Image (cartoon, rainbow, N blue to C red; front, side, top):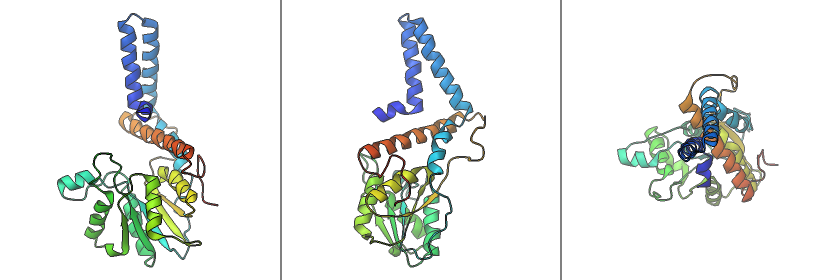
Length: 258
């Protein structure tokens, strides 16, 4: 519930509702103040990429297309692109955002044919645990004629922390192995922090970037997209804070493992 209060659409809606309530009970000055604040926020979000301002520090935390080691022992990709419920309903692979994770995974798997491969992702839903992201990914890879017998599919995890814990239990990485981690750019800091906390060093390979780093201070009316990226940015920073407080990451803003 606390998280939803921080979401921009919910927050703006609360401000507008409160302004109407105060207007109805005769508190016109307070109503006008809240209405002014809500309108100002809405206009700012509509014309400026404020969500990208939150996402860019996350996406730029680790180098994109960095030099990878010649010897790679394993490649792990975190789920996120797969819409497991829609895939079940329509009986075909349904992907949303972050499909770059799966594409990068396949590309690196071909580049390092001797590496262990693991796809990790079950369901983050509280009530619909029967739909698993790993099942959709397996179906996708089979349709692309990739030998899925080479991939370990972890399908119990419900969040990023469990992605790491359950995957480590499956592959049992040892010291001095080189593992590549693939996930969305803004999600990479929190993911790396968990890997470091569990003493599983990885080479970050961020994909699926959401920010225009060369034009972050533009004026461009795009309310729907700006609201969406702002929601993503707020949720991820709150996630970083929550994981740090619960001691699931090495720091509030993780960097590479020491």
